[in-house]
Length: 352
Image 1 (cartoon, rainbow, N blue to C red):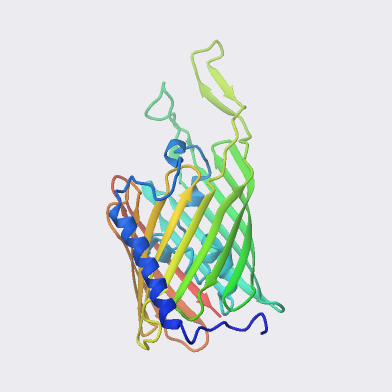
Image 2 (tube, one colour):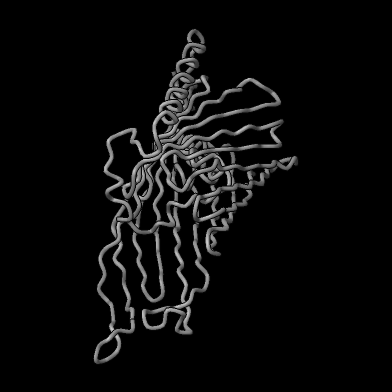
């Protein structure tokens, strides 16, 4: 058998499909049966809350993943794979490009742009992405001037990544992303290099898919620069120029996806679940569903268990534009958090 030949299960396909669906349902029931604060695996994440920096790396960049409750590590088959799981980039059938905009809290905005292309040879895909968060202008305040000094500053964070992924067989792929990340607040700049690693496995023709990814694994960053602040001293000013290192928000993700209607012509429905275990907090369990009608209209919903602020399901819609040749899809995602408010995301994905 050639290594790229698809493995089939003609004799036991229905049995494997039944086992896969039973496993997925069991995980869903286990998550819903536990209180939000319960842990599915031993974790000390609650004791480490707030111990990492570069928090913008944890914000979903695309409307589809946000609408599906951030449960896409095993089904992000578009440019968002560069953010969630680089192995999925190898599963794309054509070159793709995408742009996404997130209207975050307090007039903070985030942009994401990326693209993937196939190289001639052993099923290798390369990609590039850029993520940027901008706080906008903010007033400088001190303990002596709590209403502002008349000066302003802004916080700008960015991550630029290069991805290489390979499809070893029709069932298995892997990928790696190297990212340069930079965070700037006023005159202080912190930068470092991190990596994303991912694998993806399709369980034959059963409709089951699974994936594992580790995101933002790398070196600590040390802030550099000088920050002056008013203080009760003979000079009236204290200059801060020594800072502690900042740890990236490394996250482990395990995901399962099941295609419920694999043989339907006009209808396509998948459900997914994902266990997310960050290094700076307790893990959470995410669920998502995506229904597609006639490959044109897409409806999405999701929910995150174990996230204190998440009290309502996330929702979203997608629309494919019928056209000859390129595949153009527009997406919208809506999320509501308890005290922070609403988040709106829009984006488009173009396949050539």
